[in-house]
Length: 467
Ligand SMILES: *Cc1c(COP(=O)(O)O)cnc(C)c1O
Image (cartoon, rainbow, N blue to C red; front, top):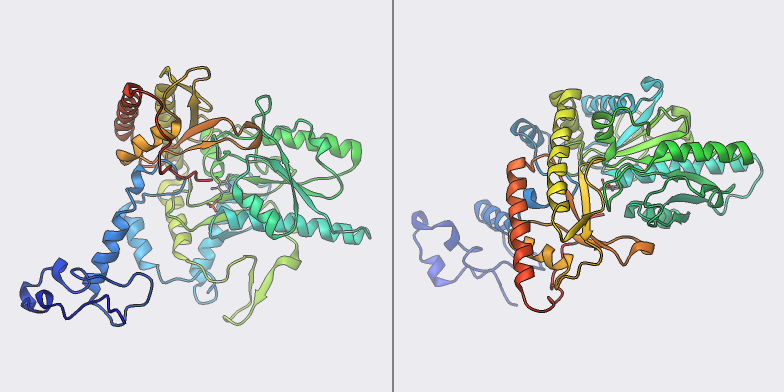
C-alpha cells in the first residue's frame, strides 16, 4: 500500500524537535491522502495549518460580490459564536434559554412584518430560506388538502404559482413534494410577477401564490399588494380564496427599514406566511433562516411533531432534526446590538453604495442598467443593446476575478434567456472605499478588453450564478 504520509522521510525525521519549523513537519513536508482516511493521527498544529491554507485558496469572502450571504460580524458576535458552537437547536429541553431566544426572534420578525397580533403569530428558525420556504409551502399544501378533503374533493393535483425568476428552492419544493409549478414567464412588458393575467393560472387546485421581495436575478421587489388585489378580484368572481406566501429571503430584512411605507407584509390579509434568510440582510453568518405565519391557525396542527425523547414535550415543524443553535443566538445578538435604527443605518449604507456603483456603471457607454439597487441593495446590468464589443460580460467577469472580485454574469430566465446580465450584491462590509477600488478595477478591465484585437474567447472559468 502506498503510504502517502511518509513519516520516515529522512530529511524530516532528522530535524531536531526544537528546530522543527511547521512547514517541515510530516504532513506539511509530505502529502496527506486526499480521498482515504490517513492511517495515523497527526499533530493538531500541522493539521490546522493544512486545512487553514487550503481554505485560504477559496478566495476572499469580502470580495465575493456574488453571494447574498453574510461574510462579516463584529468581534463580540465572533466570540459568542465560538462559545455557542456546541449548541444543538433541537435540544430545546436542555437549552431552554436558546429555545426562548428563538421564539423572541421570530416574534420580533412577526412584529417587524406587521402581524396584526404578534403574540398570536407562530414561527421557527430554519437552516436557511430554502427550508423556511419549504415549510411555508407545505403549510399551504396541507391547508388546501384538509379543505378539499372536508369538501369531499380530490387532492391529487396541487399547483403553486410564481414567477419564472423564482429562486431554485421553489423548483425544489415543487419537485420534492409533487406540486405542479406554474411559472408566469417574465417578459420585457412584465419583468416581474405583477398580477397580470393571474386568473388564467389560478384554479381550484392552486395552493398559493409566491411573490418575491428581492428577485435573485435583479434585486427588484415584486408588487405584493398588486398581486393580492388581483387575487381579491379572482375571489370576488370565482370564490377561490388563494393565500400568499412571500419569499422575502432578502427583502424581509431590508423593506421594513428602507421602504417602511411599501405594503407587502402581514398588513395584507392575504399574506399567510413570510420567509427570510437571517444569513442575508439579517446580518448573520451562514446557517439561519426564518419563517413566520400571521396566526397559529394558518399552520396546520397535523404538521407539528411533538417529540418526548429529549425530555419535555417540544413541538417542532422542521425538515432537519439537529442543526446549529449558535446562529439563533447570533441573530438575537444582532437584533439587540443594532436595534431598528442600527439595521436601518446598515441597510441604508449598503443602498448608498449600491446606488453609487450602479450610477457609475450605468454612466459607462458600454452598459445599461437592468436595476439600480433601490429595492434591495443589489443591481444588475447588461451590455448596452446595439453596442458591439469584442468581449462579453463573461470576459469582464474573468478579468475582475484576476483582481479577486467575484462578479457573476448569467442569462435571465427562459423568455429572456438570450439576455446576459452581470450582478453585484452590496453587503455590509462593502464600504464606499472598497467600492471605489472596485470601480477602478471595472474601468481598467473594460479598457483592457477594449484594447484587445479581435473577439475574446469565452473564458474557461466563469463565476457561478448564486441563486
Ligand atoms: C437566497 C434566496 C433563497 C434561498 O435562501 P437560502 O437562505 O440560501 O436557503 C430563496 N429565495 C430567494 C429570493 C433568495 O434570494
